[in-house]
Image 1 (tube, rainbow, N blue to C red):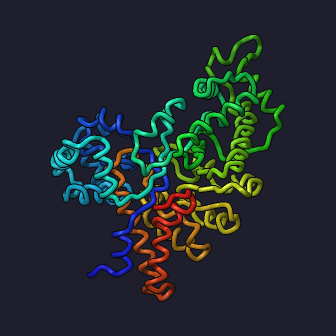
Image 2: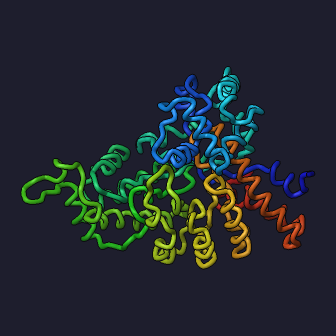
Length: 430
């Protein structure tokens, strides 16, 4: 079967990567000798656990056990992304009897290249033009200094989820270290929070504020008073009950007690985003790994915030799967919401196509973000990028064949989904 014109157009198109967790040059260099075929797995580790019925350490189980599990997951979205990447980079299907060959091919492709050259190679293979990178694991005081450790096409997010679960003093101590400001009150914490954001802005590479707190708490955000937040903060600094320090016993306080503090800081964060026109990216829907509290992640919980902060541009992640239709309705109802398919093409390619198809009927195509790989190693991006392009091509091809779109319509939509919407939203040109 010959490739349709619109499919060919999509497959050669440059991409805007709306969300990633790429390591910096130093980290790539430090891990260089240890990268083998398992470094292509990306999120497939979670499907290996799903197949096994329990958590799996790919480095600890036997090669035969791993091969058996791989056979079970090779056709899932995660599994297909791994195979797509291996075929694209090395011309080798990701099969157990080829794993040693894949390791050798990966090492050969990395050999003789600096970390920067490795990135250049992999970004070209994936046709990535811009990347919004979330380095959540870096200490706050290291963020600004780390920016030169990424390609010039990378922009960063500011993320500090631990502040919003607010069950220990650790994140406030990190704010103090990063800003040189003593954080002894809620007002002091807000000042330090704003200064920390300012430090990232000064690099010229801050793209957005990222909120990934769905991994620690639900997305319902109340609007507490300063007094309520101060009570929570004082309890956090000196949590004594019956003469016994809870901090000494557990190193933390109850999350319900701390909620007014976390929510107060979130409200101030949205105000800063509004003042400086900084986009806000929020994780909604499915959680990486296993055993996640999914119900807490529904984007519907954010409606009061979306309504209150109408001048803030919200980028809501992961199609909010399994509530993709809900996110489509939210984005149609709230002009300040952009729905994002980042990671969705790997989680569930079929559902991603259905979501995109429905969204294209519900809202302007200029509002939809088509791709984000959401992975940690540059060679993993290749498979995820291909997977997204295949899915987007499937949707547009069906619309052309069904008479909904002309070829020109489909190309225009592709341009926006794949690249232009991101460039416009984040103010990034050629």
